[in-house]
Image 1 (cartoon, rainbow, N blue to C red):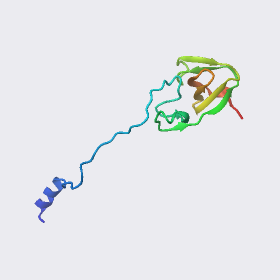
Image 2: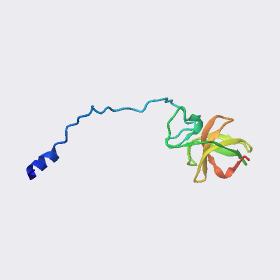
Image 3: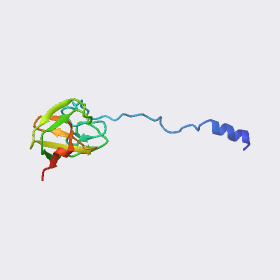
Image 4: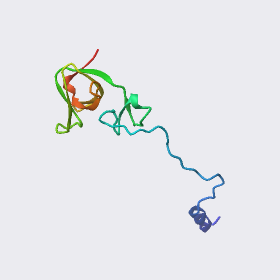
Amino acid sequence: MKNSDISSALATPPASSGPARKSFALQGRRASLDPRTHAVRPDLADVRLAEYVFAPHYAAPLPYRTNAPVTLREGRAMDSMVLAELAAGETFEVLEVAGGQAWGIAPVMGLVGYCDAGKLEQVQ
């Protein structure tokens, strides 16, 4: 085989003898859930919602109780919108703790948000 034959053989892809490739899409249950009332973020979701949404990670809620009144906020930032005030002794289901903030669910109110993790104690 000459150099010119090798160059032309490399320039043209070989003919496929198999069937044409088909593309596919992931399909399944999908639901639009309100993140104020359902613990769903782009990176994490409550494992109880796994049947309804896909997330890269799921977490099982851990029961905590507030040891002082605490503010439930929409976001991590202290200037994010206040959703509610949780009374001392109220239950808060924690899904994530990061940077001093706990993200989870206030089941009595049915709201999802962030609160000061230092004002929570795990229920034994």
